[in-house]
Image (cartoon, rainbow, N blue to C red; front, side, top):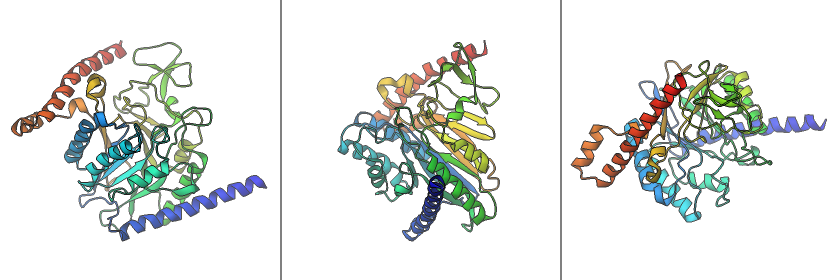
Length: 394
């Protein structure tokens, strides 16, 4: 009887939270913010920014690159997926967040924020305090889900059709937590999974059909290891799995495109059913993660893409490593929401000859220095990548 009561209470909380989030979405319109929608040509673009780990020392270069990416890609939404600014004191963290959010605010780009394992790790700010800081910027469309759900920042963002008359696509944002009670990486909790299932069913009923969707969160799901090739011994391109004794590499069976695996994925130790729930509901096309800084792959497992995105930062004193980082673009098309297109842009491929010419014309010494540092490191990284591909084929 007690278990039945707890389960019933959990469902009620999920329904209440879902209703609250719907009201929040309508409230955004009343505040003068236009709801997310496909443009007149039926397109919608998302730029994922993750794991910036902003500090005073590296702030200028990282913000310059992110701003240039926004200007080039012209996204309709920024998905900010955790580990953003967490070093130093309150003033430093606040200043770094301010610098980043002003990149988006000055360009009038909506921002959806969720948190990583490091954001509140140092106890400088609680997650709720951080969300309040982000939401002090008009460009933030993020939601503090209150005490009804584990964490802070689990919410649904509908994308309306180009005529704004119906929901055409959904974006699920999850706070995947930081660490469990045993010190392992955390993951999306049971109550968040129940919230998703309830909200997904509600969305289907309201719209008369399942609404295709994607997920953004920081920590990758444990199923990534089920979608990889394992061996008892090290092989080229493989890494020893976290919490495991075997070695793992990207599997030709599941790897959609040639992805990059440069470190072992770090999911939570325990599985609370998030992936299985998405599989059961059948409305999630892909799940996009940060967390593992140098991984950038697209693995399709049981019909759901598990997509790792690289850290969006640049630290010049470790240019060889950092030049392989960058950002991810996700393109949606209203004419066919059963699929999407995605690509990673790495810093070593970011600058063009036109960029260099513009910097020379404007006598932009700091820009030329940044370009030179990235390109020089990028040449070495590309040579390294080719060698790794050759070794993997042997």
